[in-house]
Image (cartoon, rainbow, N blue to C red; front, top):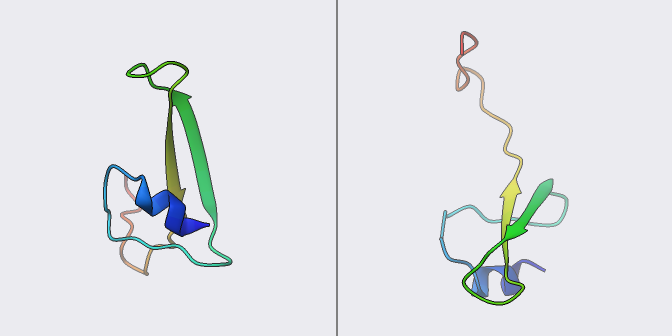
Length: 56
Protein backbone atom coordinates (compact mmCIF):
# COMPACT_ATOMS: atom_id res chain seq x y z
CA UNK A 1 0.00 0.00 0.00
CA UNK A 2 2.71 2.51 0.90
CA UNK A 3 4.89 2.20 -2.22
CA UNK A 4 2.32 3.70 -4.63
CA UNK A 5 1.83 6.60 -2.21
CA UNK A 6 5.58 7.23 -2.04
CA UNK A 7 5.85 7.11 -5.84
CA UNK A 8 3.49 10.09 -6.29
CA UNK A 9 4.39 12.00 -3.12
CA UNK A 10 5.46 15.64 -3.30
CA UNK A 11 7.59 15.53 -0.12
CA UNK A 12 9.91 13.00 1.50
CA UNK A 13 9.64 13.40 5.27
CA UNK A 14 11.83 10.40 6.00
CA UNK A 15 8.98 8.75 7.93
CA UNK A 16 7.94 5.29 6.78
CA UNK A 17 4.83 3.26 7.56
CA UNK A 18 4.39 -0.44 8.08
CA UNK A 19 1.59 -2.85 8.87
CA UNK A 20 -0.08 -1.98 12.16
CA UNK A 21 0.79 1.75 12.13
CA UNK A 22 -2.07 4.18 12.72
CA UNK A 23 -2.52 6.46 9.71
CA UNK A 24 -4.89 9.34 9.03
CA UNK A 25 -5.76 10.47 5.51
CA UNK A 26 -6.96 14.00 4.78
CA UNK A 27 -8.31 14.90 1.34
CA UNK A 28 -9.11 18.32 -0.10
CA UNK A 29 -9.72 19.99 -3.46
CA UNK A 30 -6.71 20.78 -5.64
CA UNK A 31 -7.42 23.15 -8.50
CA UNK A 32 -4.42 22.72 -10.82
CA UNK A 33 -6.35 19.96 -12.65
CA UNK A 34 -10.01 19.10 -13.25
CA UNK A 35 -11.50 17.33 -10.22
CA UNK A 36 -8.03 17.25 -8.64
CA UNK A 37 -7.54 16.12 -5.04
CA UNK A 38 -4.67 16.71 -2.62
CA UNK A 39 -4.24 13.91 -0.10
CA UNK A 40 -2.15 14.14 3.07
CA UNK A 41 -1.28 10.90 4.85
CA UNK A 42 0.03 11.19 8.41
CA UNK A 43 1.35 8.56 10.80
CA UNK A 44 0.69 8.61 14.56
CA UNK A 45 4.02 8.71 16.38
CA UNK A 46 4.02 8.29 20.14
CA UNK A 47 6.36 10.87 21.68
CA UNK A 48 9.24 9.70 23.83
CA UNK A 49 9.12 10.62 27.55
CA UNK A 50 10.27 14.21 28.00
CA UNK A 51 9.67 15.02 24.31
CA UNK A 52 6.35 16.78 24.95
CA UNK A 53 6.16 20.06 26.83
CA UNK A 54 3.19 19.76 29.20
CA UNK A 55 2.83 23.57 29.44
CA UNK A 56 1.94 24.06 25.77
